[in-house]
Image (cartoon, rainbow, N blue to C red):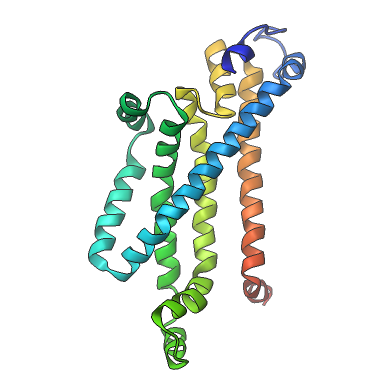
Length: 230
């Protein structure tokens, strides 16, 4: 895809900021890059959420586990992406799997912290009332604690999603970078059009994803709308 986009540039790098002839002749490639960006993001966030959910509950219930889990995911979060790619490539190559392992690793700490913060924020008197109603610990978690923690949890998912959209552009270094491939092409060829198109699309994706998830959050937590209005 990158090779096709680099070939046959119909105008020079010194032309207008956006060479519309180039955009028009590469709409299929731009669309493919956009779809790849969305796919990489969705897969990373969904798998990250599936991994984070049980780890978050374990960390919330047991302090010793919390120290290990938060330390481990914190290390993954602070690892430079290039160093992580360098470690993974000998095992998984320049592949979709390599990109996803890196992206998933960076979602864990953000989601886990927010799940724990959300559950910690449930008032003690609400828990007492739930126990007084005869709810089991599992029923209390599912019917009371998680719904009340949902706004904070959703905020973590939103942050993880927007962050992943930005990080996908970095995975262009291993050829799986969605619109990051456009940005990399623009930098390598000193050609502003793909650089601008890739940057604008990445920003638009981040804003769109955040607004969509905010809408989902408002649908799932209708009681927060009334509180905000007051």
